Amino acid sequence: MLESPENPSTLGKMMGNIYRYSAIWINKNVDFKKEFDKIWHNYWDKCLTFESSYFARLNYICFNPVKHSLVEDPVNWEYGSYYHRYNEEKEYLQKINKKYPHKNIKIDDNF
Image (tube, rainbow, N blue to C red; front, side, top):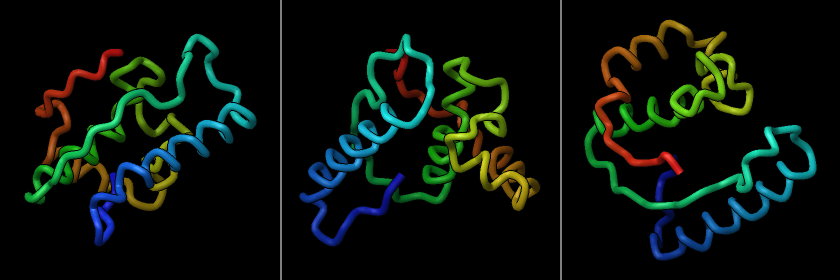
């Protein structure tokens, strides 16, 4: 999740570069399940204008590895920010997850 640059028309090119260079790095440095043929799949933008939308989508991102059966708890997904924040902000993250549940978001991402 990103904040749009001042000129939002540059966001697509910026995301393309992020995907490209991070995929190259991941392919060289991370031992991930080889049945995945892509590191990144699909990109779409959404302008979030409400606090509830922001936090629900943030939770959706954090819990995506759980949805796709990569781990049973996002705390165990060491490649995500939730994993790194959990020890310092456990109560805050649990509060946000409860207040803004990610399960209410309907996004078809079963690729």
